[in-house]
Length: 115
Length: 111
Image (tube, chains in turn brown, yellow):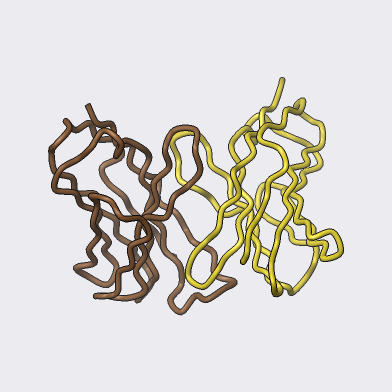
């Protein structure tokens, strides 16, 4: 069966420090991959999605970036964190070619606090 | 454009009583619709999905939802609430590769 792993589970970082969050999926090939952010008391905001290696789309311009070094690995990065980057970051995957009818499956998230 | 509207930001029920979480959708074609649940500090878990095969969709943990085209609704129900059902619930549709989330309904279950 398919599984998705995110780490770390929690992270406390100072303003201006770099960031790297990692997400890996097992048990499937060429999944669609997604990064979301959920700020306190707000809904989910799609940050990036990838329908294949070297195909990453950004939904919101900001100081974050995403990379997909391997088929089932998705990394969220920043060179310099801002206070506004605090939140709950969720990675998700869906079956490849999912135009519709394809649910996304979520990891357990990373709670990021910026001091 | 596809969208979903969750009609209640908070719903409070007593343990053992029925649960109704309301969702209306807007779509120019037959939509895909999902319900997800999120417990505190956890990721989202898929409860059920509608993909036009049947209007009454059964999900996990005793939840079900009925697709009503005439009312453009996809309400989530459960006959008897458990304390463990307390969480936030999201009604979701999709557009191309992306999910479109409702604003969420927080379900409180009173003992």
